[in-house]
Image (cartoon, rainbow, N blue to C red; front, side, top):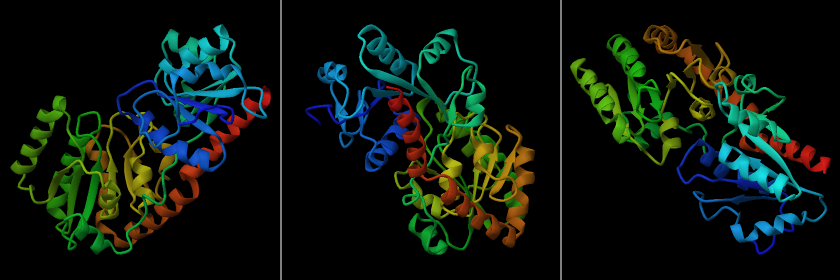
Length: 352
């Protein structure tokens, strides 16, 4: 923990203890940003101690700009983080430039609109998010750790490593098990496809929270009733999720709603083609017909139609796998995201 903020140019507040996508973004980005020389520090609870952080006792130090600058950037990602920035800048007259990253894909409340209007800059995580903002924004898509998410050197070995039978190909669906995530659409699509494609199995990796346990149980009963309990596997939540991606041959993201959604990127970085709903940033991540397909949300028929050619055409599957990996590596590194954010920081700092 620093004793002085004299070298720090960017404050990344985090004022919620609950783990969320915002938390994951901060945890992933801050070390990379600092490695790139962006001089970022976090502020608030709910983050690992490995990240550089400041305390509330150090807030008075924000009255003095960092060495070589006339201000700092306060980079908020939630309403609860925008408001303190406004108070520090406009009431306490601290030399701060306020930046907000928006991931929301809905019309904002009047309160949120006012908060956003007080920002010096706004980043949108995708074009769809930008369309809901009533002011200019810079679109910066999320990136991922391309070392952590990478292809299997040998697919059979990768399958064995997570306890899967290397004699089969696998379609995966990863994330929370709940209606919003479309897990039922995945199950229903596979229930129609697997009987006529004996070389394939499905894998559902993720946890059902207490509120959604009944939903998960209904899906398991449906799988059992269809005689597919050995073909559609519920493997639960795992911390080694990159290993599970490497074991897949095809990935499905069947969400009915999504803010951004990193799973298609994680799959493609693992050389796994993606069939995804037209929600969140998915249409901006998947290259239609090359790295997979985007389909209309909520329709089992749409997923069946999109999946079938990949289950029946080895060349199509191999080509899409190659394209997916190349696309992810070229466009979606976390370093690329950090550099793009760094350009926004530089513009705000230059405004003084």
